[in-house]
Length: 211
Image (cartoon, rainbow, N blue to C red; front, top):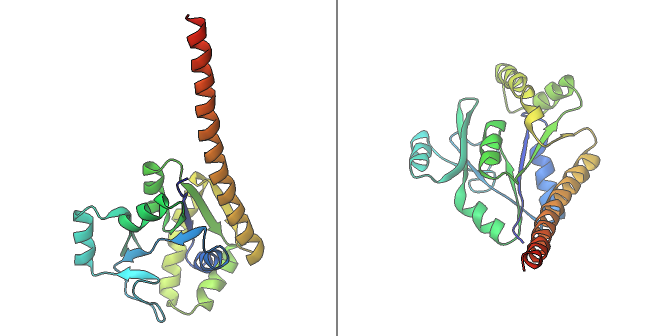
C-alpha cells in the first residue's frame, strides 16, 4: 500500500520542527521527512541536506523552470519548495511522507493529492507564541513582529486544514499527530477495499438480473 502524504504547517516558532524530529525518531519505519529547498540563508547549526537544501534565488528559479517542485511559495521574502523525486519514491515504498511546509504550499499539495492529510499546529496562546519566538534567539524584534503579522494572515486560513493540533503538552500533541495519521491511512485503505468489493458485488447482482 502506498504511503500517505502528510502536510504539517504552523506558525513560525510553534515547535512543529521539534515535533516532526521526534515523530521520525520514534517511528523510523513509518515516516520520512521530505527536505525542502529554500533560498534563505542557513541559521546557526543548520546543515545542507539535513534541514534544507539551500539555494540561491537563481538556482531556485531554475528548479521552478524545470518543474522540479511539487509545490513552492514565497514566505517572509524567501523561496521554499518541495522537490518531487524523493516524495514519489517514498510513497511508492509505502512510507508516510511528512512535508513541513507553509500554508500556501499545503493548499498546493491538497489540490494535487486530495487524499493528503493537512495538519496545522498552533500554540496555546498568542502570548506563548511570542515567548517561543524570543526564546529561540534567531530573529530580531523587527523580524519577530513580521512573523507575527504573517501569523495573523495564516490564522484566517487554518480552518481549511483537516485538523488543528495544539502544541501545549508535547507528548499529547505528538501522540495526537501520530494517531491522526494512522487513522487517515486506515480510512483510505478501507474506503478503497470496501468500495471496490461493493462494486464487484453489484456487478454480479446486476449481471444475474440481466440474464
